[in-house]
Image 1 (tube, helix red, strand yellow):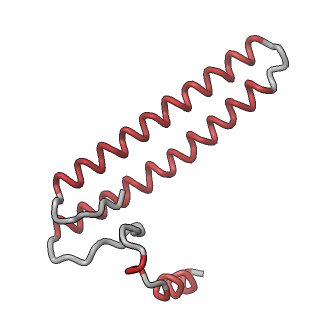
Image 2 (cartoon, one colour):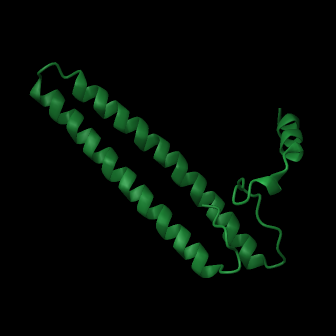
Length: 116
């Protein structure tokens, strides 16, 4: 399985996709600080992406709860609370992403593409 993935990765001409990086696939540079920043950016981007997926699933769950409340005020309130919490979570994730992107660009000005 991993052999197949590595063959597919090697077959793709990554130069055609500027700005697209995989976790650990950092820019080839002699500056170890830049490489570390890219790896941190990749890891944080992956983590925020996974948390974002969970928040969207939570949002869908809250919408389902709200729609299927069938006139029960408690269920509708619980569904509305879940939706609001999921939206707040998505806003926090978006702001976190922006903060990480700004910090990495500030600490690593030589790299024009932020991989988060």
